[in-house]
Image 1 (spheres, rainbow, N blue to C red):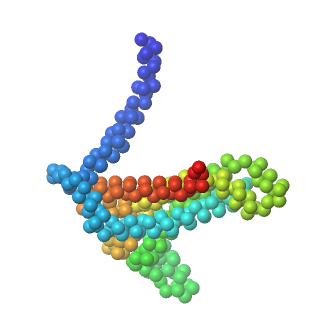
Image 2: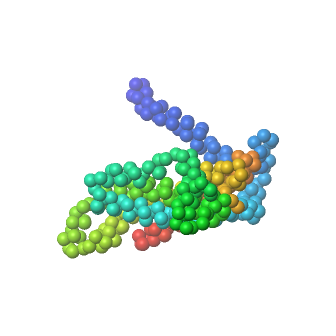
Image 3: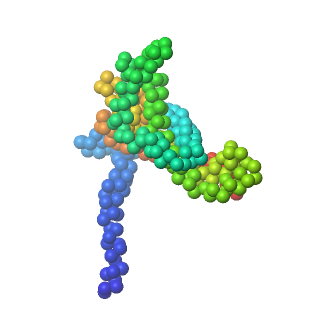
Length: 297
């Protein structure tokens, strides 16, 4: 009996975790899936509508398509910039600033750990049409002020700047961790053989960083499609529609937020959430196939 009791102790200790996971993660996932096939405003009785919510998303919701376009545009523009800048800084700090690397690493990582509320307020002040720092500097060099937060294209540009500024430091840290796993003997052997720095980077660094590169790209795509905080806080003024002027910066998650928590269409909002899950899965799968194409036998 004592032996059997001791054998059950580990299961007893991990039971609270599984109970909490089932209550706060698994149940909401399953419940929202069921909810996506209903029409419900949160008060009246649920009405089963089958696939009508999903059909409406792809046939009768122009704002959903606009949010998909905006999200894809932000992802396509910012991810390459973040990766290139993060990798360049990581290599630069490792090869040329090894002694003071920690300080520079912390400085570049600060934007990522700054709260979104503070970032939204800072960029609202910087890009204000009349008193913003950016327009003041433009006027100093003879360029007319731009209504950054009041017109569609500049609004998208500001969101892209915020996303890129916040994300590149995180990529830099990931690449630095990947660089630390590459044996120095490889670089020393290449140097003895007469290889230049650029050759070592191309033939040693990049191939050895492929696993971390794959992780960075996949997580960047997922986080890009989940974008919400920065544009929501940037255009939270009562005079602005959700997503900024002409919904130019409305992301898919913002569309979900508007439908579910402003219009109280919880069934339709759940359908949007699961549609986003499908879209992220497709893009992640295609990225894996493309990046692993050379390794297939």
